[in-house]
Amino acid sequence: MIISKIVATDYIYLNLHAEEVISTNYIEDGCSGIFVDRLTVETVKRAFEAVTSDGTSRNLVLNFRHINACQKNLNKTIIDLKKDGYKILFINLKKAVCEDLSLTIISNHKNISEGDVWLKYYFFEDAEDVFTNTEIDIDKLYKATFQSKIKAFIDPHKKPHASSFVYLTSYVDIKKLLSHEKDFMLFSLYKLANKIRKEWEHEIGKNPILICQSMNSAYIVSVLSNLLQLDILILDKIGPINKLYNRMGSTISADRKYIVVSDLVCLGTEVKIVKNLVQFMGGKYLGNVSLIKIETLADEDITGSDATKAVFSINRTNNKELNYNITTDLEQF
Image (tube, rainbow, N blue to C red; front, side, top):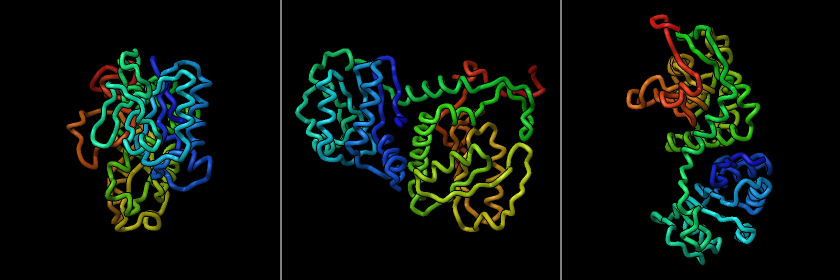
């Protein structure tokens, strides 16, 4: 299983920390979550096999973010790939790791560093090579890839959104997206876990609880629980019909902190229900995360704990292409 491989026009991208997380937690049965920071030979070999079997490009971008150490002899695997004719660009590579890999013998004046990190480190000498002029925007590449994949799972929908009293032109089938794009969705959840880690870095060590309210969210929260080493709470049947069947007093604990996990946040009605329940029972609501969010307001108009953290947004820049819109009876549907 390779989760982070993205084929761009001029290169193939791999996030080696994401692949190490998968190796440690799902292949080797470890329990370090996203906190593992040592890259192993087996992970690199597995990732490179996926690249060499692809055959679409001889240019390779390797993201080393969150990697602080490497297993011995790993540099041989990288050097062998170079000998096979691959041009390699390392990004977010710590200089100490670069030295451990014995890669400092390469001299390319287009290599860029900031502090103790190589932002770009070309593992070849020819600074005039076309690859050195290729735009590398990983965030843009990821979002474009997500958008291309989600299109197949957006269906026409002309029924009212029962909990928020609006009309939706489309319905995003999250269940199918999760099941048909398993590898990429796992990479997306890895990215979401890192967002949580960054947003609540001072709270993660205090063991906040991840809480969700749907079956799709239950899968998402279970993966995040494994990656972040946090407990979870699943509330059954909180949804558009706005009913609750669980006894809240036996599930939500006073003085515990909660992060609400969703699959898709449209107008946030279900999130508000859970937030109110948490606060009513004496818990502390930290905020909300979601795989996808619909941006009905500009970022500057949603602040603090009301701002949903997500890895992909449907907003005014892409909603027409995705045929996704929200209307009311005040305008023609």
